[in-house]
Image 1 (cartoon, one colour):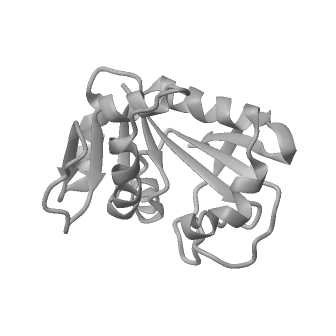
Image 2 (cartoon, one colour):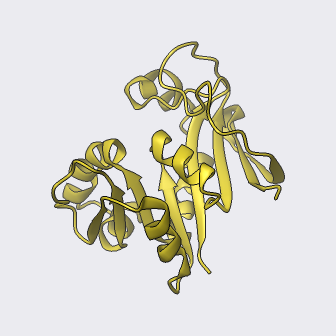
Length: 184
């Protein structure tokens, strides 16, 4: 069975707001962080998005022809699934829209042969999949900054899940990757 990996880039106070990445993400760029991101994409063979994350990433990556770090070719060739009740069609190569029975459909994807299904961003979708107990592993790339405002991955009232820390990976600039699995 394939693993569903939730991969999130966040601040110490849980902000994962793409509109504020210039404040919290960009200042901590490093070779080790870039290598970590590349490795995440190399190990997955499917990517899952919520509609907002898909609409943010698809125009950029689908037009990317420079593949210096190997990410563009991978993102453009791997099967992609976008969860949305409103998106009529997905123009990005190899993308399928999941409109209903989300947990059931993603459960079926996990049963297909293959390696990891990676989910990036997509906070609302993460919550739905947490509640359905479909997430196998969480990878939080935590940046050493408290931003104080912005979209947070974990909102008040979210499903609370007990997690087991299975690995830590320090990166340059004080960034650390925390790997968690469900403690069930």
